[in-house]
Amino acid sequence: MTAIGPGSSGVWCIRDDVDTVLALARSGFDWVALDAQHGRFDRRSLIDNGRALAGAGLAFAVRTAGPDPAGIGLALDAGASAVIVPQIDTADQARQVVDAGRYPPQGSRSWGPLAPLWGHEAAPPAAAAPQLGVMIESAAALANLGAIAEVPGVDLLFVGPFDLALSLGTTVDALLADGDGPLAEIAAASSAAGKAAGIFAGDPERARILRALGFDRIAVATDSGIIAAGARAILGGP
Ligand code: 3PY
Ligand code: MG
Image 1 (cartoon, protein in one colour):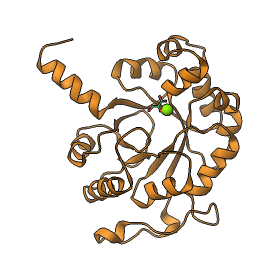
Image 2 (cartoon, helix red, strand yellow):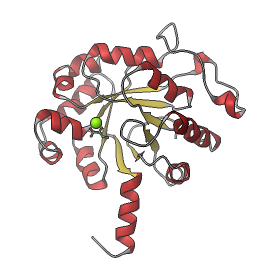
Image 3 (tube, protein in one colour):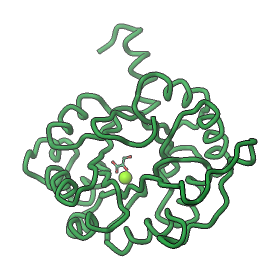
Image 4 (cartoon, rainbow, N blue to C red):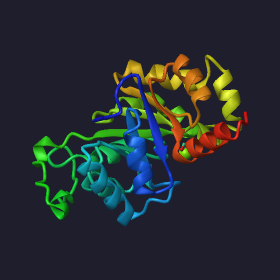
């Protein structure tokens, strides 16, 4: 587990429970993402979860609360090897993500890794090469797709299908059913620009459809969804 790699299936954690995060990270998923936008993670718990994951030798991603450089820096200081930054609508905003995620001279990330807090040596700045993902989840982002995809230093275009559907005045199911629609367009634009294409699915059935649409880095389940599905399976439900 190092980055959000090709053909990968990730688990999206919202519950901010370090034992659950560790158990899921060890259970066979290719990556784990801690959701600081819509999940419970705050500054303190991102650091605590980061320490636990680093101690177990497990890499992780953080979906930041927003595009601000402080949140991106915090996630990386806590040891994330990838950030997924929500609601990026323009190439300028994507450039700001790259600026926040890279040390000088490529960017203006401030030095302050937290590994020394728990007795690890900090990796030298030159060794820092986090994977930088921007979320495509609005009509505006779709209109600026080519320009966003071309931004140097952006590694990953990651779709938020729920916000995208809201912004387009449609539904996630309708987006999934449209084989030549916006989702396929985003996957194609990513690959044309040499960037990775990821997406939040939230359940394995949606993930199967999304793989066929061209996405190969998929958040296939959430921690809460896994608990609910486990309970249903044990109780013999659907
Ligand atoms: C979306 O679908 O909008 C997301 O951000 C997934 O978490
Ligand atoms: Mg979203």
